[in-house]
Length: 194
Image (cartoon, rainbow, N blue to C red; front, side, top):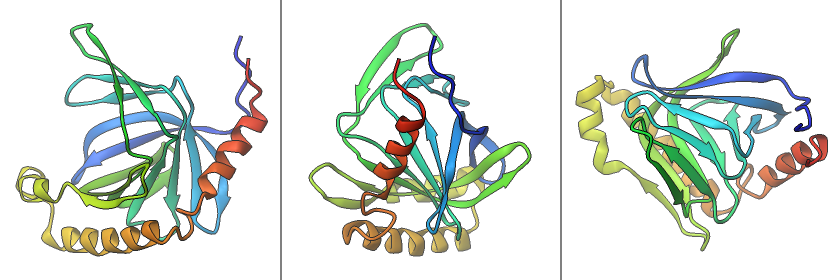
């Protein structure tokens, strides 16, 4: 039997503007520091994707940070991350994803009695294992603005936030300075293997 996880569990939801569910998962809240609230979806945890019906099982820990100031939500992975994807037709696929840090530009995040949620604003900033940092999904912005009625002011803000995150990530400023690994270690020290 797996060891109990001694952290509060909550539902997390990723939305498309303004309130269309894109995905949800259950994560454990590890704590808070000057950067924001840290949470983890441990290895074996699942994400349910609303549109495709896919269920993704994590091959390793997905550490998340919800900053105090909002504007983005970050994911921190380990090298060689694997995702196991179960499609609604029963087929399964395993994918290796090369991105280490992945930051969604968002409205929110909003925490309440039901958990945490944020509205995805399309643009993302990623860091690859070789240290390259890039702003991605700019090519999807126009289509998503039309599809979900995202106000252009939100997109302008997302672009400004993406530029700030890009700079912080490229310069390895907190929280992109390895802080995530301290939180990952805290989790594993509290939940012995086995």
